[in-house]
Image (cartoon, rainbow, N blue to C red; front, side, top):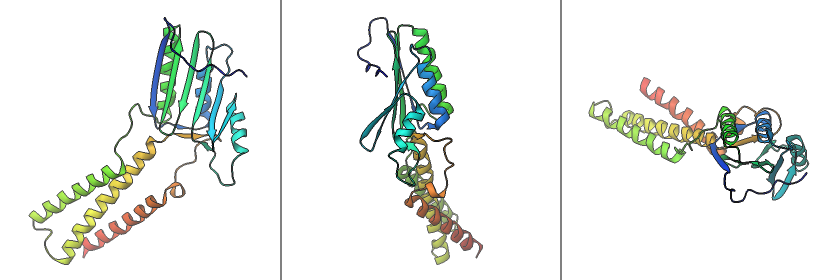
Length: 240
């Protein structure tokens, strides 16, 4: 199929609509919705799909065709997901380009029909936000939330010390240390969860698998285990 031309400077009288949505979780069905929205009202109603996979640029005119091209390069045990995707289509009066990367999906719509361009932009926004996307980047990272948790714990310990609950006894010091550890680790894990929600998921083989222990990074698993141990120790220390 012919490759739609890359968008250049907009002609006079052309309406340009651009939207950006972060962290959308796109499975096979939602990617197909994006493709259908791209081709609706365009003649001919076809789109080109492009992805860069291990340095190779793969092209197809359907998601099934792109999935076949990718699966031919998969190793056993590899996830059925893409790191990036470009959907492009257009004719003499309209063009739609969807660029999906690691964090954001950017949709650029150009048309001589302003109402069509604005309406199509809202349609894309709804699809992406329905997929869990956000108009703003969730900026609270693990480091910031860990620091916030440590500061909150320090304030709690200070208040307990003023009230005489925490003093110089070994058990009291251990309780203070465990409160600090629990708050810091909790902040880290919440920050990691928010960072995951910033990442785009492009799953090309059915619904997205539910996240679980096996999808966590090693550092996240260690932190979760440390949190369980710290919480258990804190409860035992309080009940003594």
